[in-house]
Image (cartoon, rainbow, N blue to C red):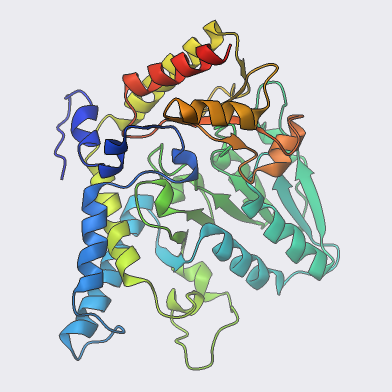
Length: 387
């Protein structure tokens, strides 16, 4: 495990040494779709899978081991997000579908749901479809196409005493834009609406405080921050107690287990705990990533590349296109140079269409904990070769 100390420079070489995938030689800018995984996470998964383990309980050692893995993962994620209760699921998409259907049980015709054009479809479509089933109204908040900003008033002007849910991203997975979630949440709560925050792209790049964000529900995905493929939802236990999801008759009604369908993937929970512990050792990560983002953007500007990520507060994620070249062709040619920077709409299809990029989208370069200056320079050199 890495041990950094206050005041020390971020040691990216030491970080990279923990990522076996980097030995293949590619420069990875594909982290927004799923980060590479450090050795300690793989070891935690392996140990859980190969140890004696069974369904949770307190009689046998195997049962107690499963119970401890779950308790530790809940506690670790709760501390990491500053949240009261943690629900685990297959993915953020699955959790959002489950919770949208549960919340929609209390909706009536004429109720209103607010979604944004900035969001990933996993924080749009479940709400739109649940609203259609309940004959509720969907209200759409636009973002500024020029700046990539989502102004507070774009959302707050849509609120009314019929608003039931405001679904909003904490950081756009396409543009990196970080809206003012706390201010929007405060306005939504004045209307007694729930606030459901997609933190999938936010969590890998900024300290998360669910209470400070004033989010009723906050969802994220460990595989975006060095962990295994899994979904996490955070909420206050008192709120979860008020919700009645569909579940099997013999399954527990306790919170948060009532929201978890079937046996939990213990090995993935062990890996999630290891990922969070690894991240906690990365002092200076945010400054490291933003410094590389500035280096990348400056280089792309010099090359005359069109950049769409312009919000004043944004993650180290850059969406760009090269004039005269299809995004998919840029992706292929960068890949041939050992630079993994994919192209598309990345399921933020409303965002891509709102930008005028259609369903083809653009090229996305995401910087992560293991990105170094040579990676950025390789990307810039590969883009220059295109032109």
